[in-house]
Amino acid sequence: MTSKQTHEHASRLNPSWRTLHSQPDATSPNPIAAVLAASERKTQNRIEGEAAKRQLHEAITKEQTDSLTRVKNRSWLEAFSKQLDREKQHHGLALIAIDLDNFKEVNDEHGHTKGDEVLKNIAHFLSEHFRSNDEIAHLEEVVRPGGDEFLIICYNQKNDQNFLEHLTQKMLDLQQHPDKPNPFSFGIALFDKDLDQTLEDTTNRADQHMYRDKNERKPFTTRFMQLLRRAFGIKSR
Image 1: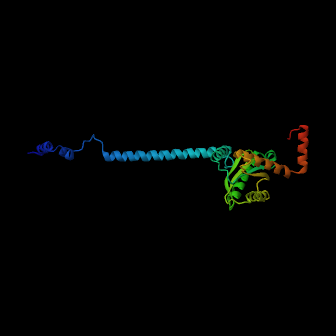
Image 2: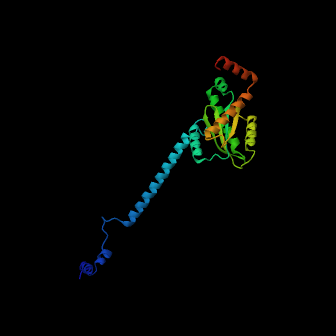
Image 3: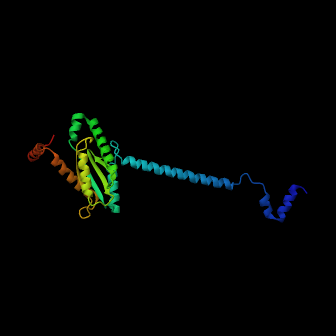
């Protein structure tokens, strides 16, 4: 009996024998290859998903970063405000509003290139002095909402009872710092659940304190001339 006859005879006696001993069909799918292909597709999808998330994160970061000073911008502040108000995570929050003094004169006398340099330097100055070795005030972000205005957002990480005094003294020291890029005025407001409903309410109170500081620090003659211009409806140059 030939091998072919033996194979056919065995197949008639035991049909499963044909399955076990038949030669693989070149057109039939390879189960191992299929598993490997599925695993490769899954890995590729994961890589593409991670790349898409990374690109989205980079796009959002770019959108929320001030292109000149590299600190956060108004877009970031609005997103942070919505998140904070939604989660009610205002406890221990402090806002410091900062406005550069006589910045218009810098631009008028030295040009906008010099003005841009001052803005970049003041952003770096504030960031460095709030990030370094402060065990009480935890810096969240330095923000440039626009123009020559900045906001420092920080938290009382030690629940220190003298948090406001600590921030005030820190800012007074920075006002007198020999390496400050430009004189500035500031105002501080701590989130107060009895006064504030949103982050914007706290920001507005910080702005009020800042303008009071700016007005008190101006020479008397400057304030007097401003009052005269306001009384006679004369616009400041």
